[in-house]
Structures are given as C-alpha cells and as structure tokens.
Image (cartoon, rainbow, N blue to C red; front, side, top):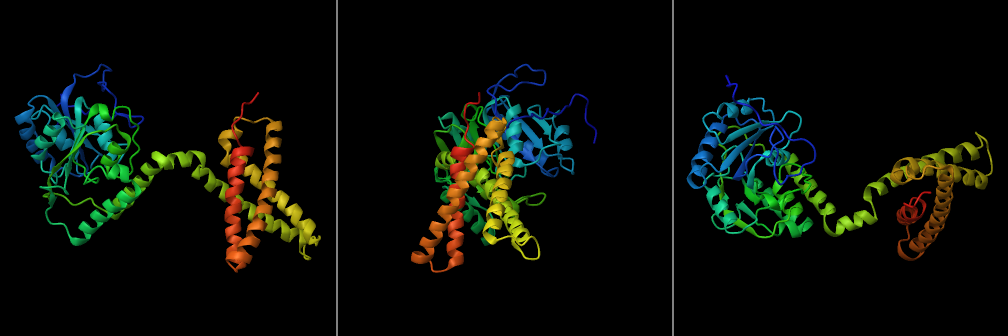
Length: 412
C-alpha cells in the first residue's frame, strides 16, 4: 500500500498514564486546542476502519465541523490496520493515526490517545461499528448541558443488545453485579460500568494517574477522575459486520482484577493496606515457611540418634534460634528492605535482631496459649487448633515486627 510522504504517524507518548492539561506537539510547542477528540482503539480492524472513519466524519461534520479530531490508536495489527487508516488521512484531514509497537491493551491505547489529543472533551468508541456512531451527538449534547461524563448505556431506556446469547447476557449482568459488590461507590454511579463508549471533560481526568487492567477504561475514569455530574444515553449494542469478536474469558478475569485493584487503591481498603501492607505480610509468611524447614532439618541433624544424637530440648532450642536467625536475615533483606536500607549500620541491625528475637519468643508464648484455649474450649481437634494458633501468632509476629523491629526512625 502506497503512503504519501506528507502522511505521518502520531508519536506514541511514554511514561506515566496521565492526561496533561495541554498536550505538547512533537516539536514541543502546545498544539491548538479544539473542542472534541475521539479515540478509536484498534486491533485487526482493517476491514472496518474505512467505514468507521467515514461514518464518524459525516456525523461530527454536522454539529462541530472542523472542531474535532479522530485518533486511531492501533496496536501494530498484523493485518495492517494502521496502514489502512494512515492512507485515509489525506481524504479525512481530521484523522490522525498512532501505531503502538511496545505496549498492548485497549485501556492503555485510549489513554495514550488522550495524551496526544487536543480536545477539551475526550471520547472513545470501538473501531468495529458495534457502537452506533449517531449516539455521539446525544452524548455531546449532554456534555454541553453541563455533564462531566456522558456514557452510552445498554441498560437505560433506548438501550439493549441486538443478538447476544443467554450465556453472554448472564456473564455481562453477573460482572456488573460483582462490580457493585466490590466497588459500589464507583459502579453504582452508572447503569453500564462496562461501557466502552463515552465522553468526558478533559479537566476531570487531568493528571490522574491511571493504572488499568484489561479493557474497561470507564472504571478508571470514574474511580480515579474528579467526575461530578454523569449523564447516560441509551444505545443498542450491534453485532460485528467484519472481523471476529475479541471477548474472551481472560477479559472477565481482567475485569475482576481491575475491580480489586481499584478497591484496594481507593477508600477504606487503601487505608487498611497502608497500615497493614498485604505484600509485606505475604513475604513475611514465605520467610516464616523457610524457617520451618530450617528448624525441622536442624532438629533432625542435632537430635536424631543416627546423626549427632543430642538431647531433644537442647537441639530444639538451637534449631529454633538458627531458624529465627534465618528468618531475620530474609526479612531484613527482603520483606522490610525499604526500612533496612535506610538503617544499614551494624548497631541498627543488632537492635533489629534483638527485637525480632523477643517478638518471636512472645509469639511462641501466644501460640501455646491460643492452642490450649482453642483445643480445650472451642475446637477439640489439635491440628485445627494448632493451625488457628499459628495463623494468629503469624499475624502477631508480623504486626509487632512491622511496628517495632522495622519501623522508620530518624537515623543519625
């Protein structure tokens, strides 16, 4: 396919996924602002892209002629979608094309497009005509009337799906219900949180740091942006005319991961995670597991008649102390490395080790007490009682060590 020398690709923004107030051009000079920028993320849409651009141009020329841009963001499609789109730019001057070769994913494609866009209103639409282009005008009208975000919804008056199977309808509604349970303050604001067809005022998402998983960018906009008034417009989701559906089980898994990530990074769970960091607790547990193996191996070597044959009590004390030392080294170098790197002197390390020993000893006492209470008064099964005691003692050891042994103090 021949492409004129005057045709060129938009440079792909790099760095954090943040939308600036005024996007720079390739020369470093701020581009001329326009009213509306519409992002079309694509992958293997060479059979659709001409029709999509033609229909969008016809509609946008009716109500904002010359005051908009279309940006195709293609993830280096093997069918040459970006080349087809680039060949259309001489025919459609409002069209620009970005070819991404390093990154992948619909959500990040949308954000990279917004980073390069010049519009005060930013939008997104699929590149497969499953989102009817004529709904754009109604979305735009709602923004002009004062909405910060206008969402095309399948679940309000005038909305629906054309010919989905029962299973797909069930999964879609199930995903929405699950989202309401995990993230009610975000998903409860719109009827169709999985919509990929919407417009948002640029200032509502300026400088928010996005961290999407999968392809549901609307969750990020509502969860991380400063969005007040939301309007919804009904639309009927159409079946593809060209190509094949990209809906897979992986996208549903990504959706759940995305919900959990947003839930942890916002609100009460964020505060809980800051006071009880889950990632450090997991590392602490893995280190403790390594200590169990060290303890068991040394106890065998020291006390077994076929090895050294020392008395059991002496062997256990030595094995336990070496296991504690093993755990301290790993926790100091890995679990709490962010603190230990700031306090590298030998005196500081010795203080941490002494505190760690004392906390672990207290943990053993706590373990024994809980084991006896659970076994004698609650669950008369020594193994289940022991598991409960170990779990509680582990949380105790982590929490106290976090607050006492590896706390951030001023180093002189």
